[in-house]
Length: 368
Image 1 (tube, rainbow, N blue to C red):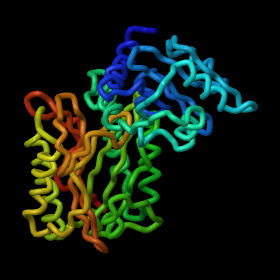
Image 2: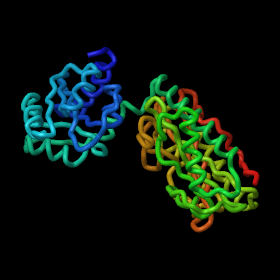
Image 3: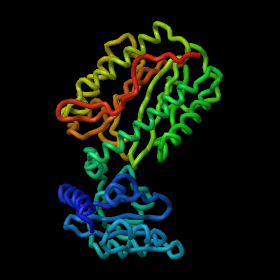
Image 4: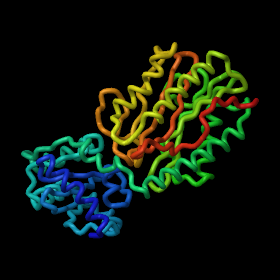
């Protein structure tokens, strides 16, 4: 195996030892991709690898993936299987070879049928959900990973400005969504990190709204939440604009959210907890006249996935080390009228924080 692959596998050897299990079992997803540096699909064909506490490794690989698997440098035994014969024998041989009595798995990633296949092959196998521990090595980003995120953000910001430059009052939410997607790819995105949220007026009060074929009107709030994917890493940015005019009350709502967002930047530093950040950010909203319109926490980790650890919310006392990246996205949502959210991507540093997002946050009224 390559040195880099050995190092990454070593992380899970240590996790297996700490958890007191025989092995960590990974399935295709962000942790799997981090280990082998190659994206494999999660579909109807089981594909998994085990990293044992004693350093041994093995994998179950669909036969049609063997050529691709050969590129990753994994030199443990491989138990392959074909669609025509099924995978039951591969699971039995895999577990029989390793002699496992207990394994830790990713509870948010492993699908039920893979879990059942493990137990069918060995009913006495103890399976532990260790999502948090298995995902922990991804929380601290490497310089290369941070640079991939910077590029994803730069692409996203250029695409947003192109979309706003082309805005006219005769557009619908769907028109803006489609233009934004085209602009993301025109600016160099490999993919979009998630389906963009483009929502105006009362639709913006739904935090995860879907774009409608509804014409924007003068005075509407326009919320755009989106991101490019580049180098396997995600951007996640939200900005809220106003169409042609903004009322005094709406401007006050916007400035309240902006103060909360800025508080998040202000308090972030290595060693702070997710709870403390959320308490500071949401505290600004709670102290305002609009406290009843709080619907969401401060944010979430960002990296290979749009939502990953740490989850920045009260009650999560996880300490954030330098190299952690999270979204700072306070919002206020007035049902039936408007929603305002301002989201930046924040890098935790030893001395404070750095906003990887540079798109201006000052209130912006779109001319029409």
